Length: 333
Image (cartoon, rainbow, N blue to C red):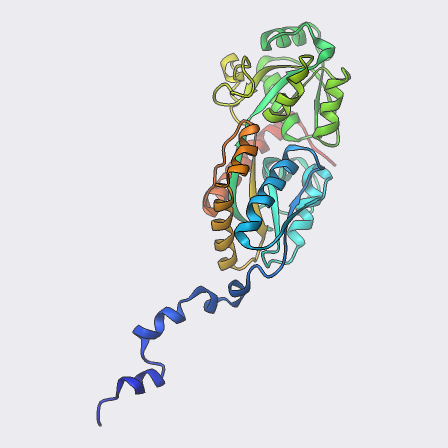
């Protein structure tokens, strides 16, 4: 039998060394990647406009759009500690057209605090990348203008158990549980006043209706500009440039150095090539100067991650915050 020619081998589909690059091309392996994205992309935020999640989501949308070559819009779906938005994002088509700006509340706290949760943070979402860890600050409002520092706040709380009040953006939210951890560490009892979101809680502080609050450092900085509200401590590993004079609570015997984190997810069952594309696109978006500046104004820096690193973070945080929920009894029916 005469040897087969190279032309014959190629015609028979056996010219593997030459055909392999085309065969392995991702767009051919998964047709979804060839056209992605072929429509506008939305980022679902589980909180109302004006808060930190909205600010970061919109900055991400503006930076991500040029990278993907499609408009990226933000859809606010507030309610149930971010659970309304999380459930909506989890039910979206797994085609890369819907992303979810998850936070520690929705991905780690809610599974323990909500007795009936309409989504599963591990089963219903595919991790893409961490965005950043955002430090918190403890602020004292004009109703307690005489409390000039953290020791004074703690002393006042110890002198009048249950008389001072602290605000949060909801039962079992990060702002609630961070403050509970501080108070429990110092043996202080205060009355918790929950609000529906960050903005009305901040307004109550400014109006003197509530005495103090733990909130993102960027929001704290805006509250302190008029001089009537004071940041007495930060929940961070080190002092923050945006809140000079506010020392970390760790210096007062409180084992707490992180406020909250935010991360980008897609609905589960999104094709892996699209997830890979999104991880690269989100990383590129986080290098945009405008995005870096927005995050810097909140006392943080962008912290992109691999999907595997984000998944591991979620597992650790669900265990850690679950213990806090059980210790405080911060359950939501």
